[in-house]
Every structure is written in C-alpha cells, then in structure tokens.
Amino acid sequence: MKVLQVFFITALLCSSLLAQASESGSGDPRYTIQNPPAYAMLGDLLIARPLLVVATVIGAGAFLVSLPFTALGGGVGDAGQALVVDPAKAAFVRCLGCTGEGFERRE
Image: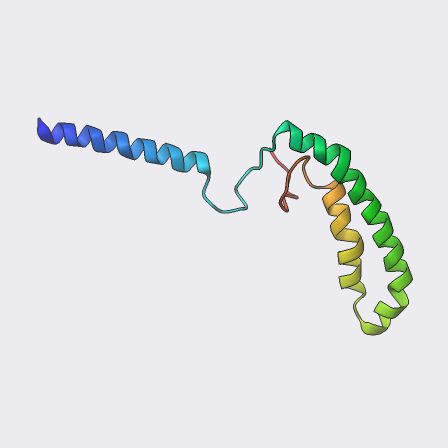
C-alpha cells in the first residue's frame, strides 16, 4: 500500500514538471514562439515601424553616398547589410511586437 502511494505521488510530481517544461519550451530560440502583448504591438506599429522605415531610407542614402569609398575598401556587402538590409528586415519582415530576430513565419 505504501509503495502505491509513493508511486502515485511521484507520478503526479513528474507530470506537473513535464507540463511546466512543455509550457516553457525547449529553451532553443529557434523553437520559441513570441506572443507579444497588445501594447507592444501598438507601440511597434505606431512608433518603431515608422522609425525603422525612416532609418532604412536614411541608410540607403548613406549607403549610396559611401559607395565609392566602401567599394575601394571592399566592404560593399557589409555596408549594404548594416545600412539597408538589417533596418528593412526589422521594419518589414519581423512580426508585429516581436523583439528578437524572429524573421521566420509563424504558423
């Protein structure tokens, strides 16, 4: 009888630990899904996205101005990535309210 009680208590503890582990995810950032709250989505839509679009346009202008110098130095790809591609990805590809590099599609 005592062995049966210990078995059931252990099973309950293990099931609660497994439920907590499945809710928190695997810890691998590729498999975590961001679920931002509504205020984060609103702030992103009204403040962050317009600023990122402006940063993309200014970065494209700076890239064009610096293109002769970066071409001589061999850093055209790095300059384009930093000044144009990264802000554009953050403005147009990132999910609304997400804070990480979550450029993958959500299902």
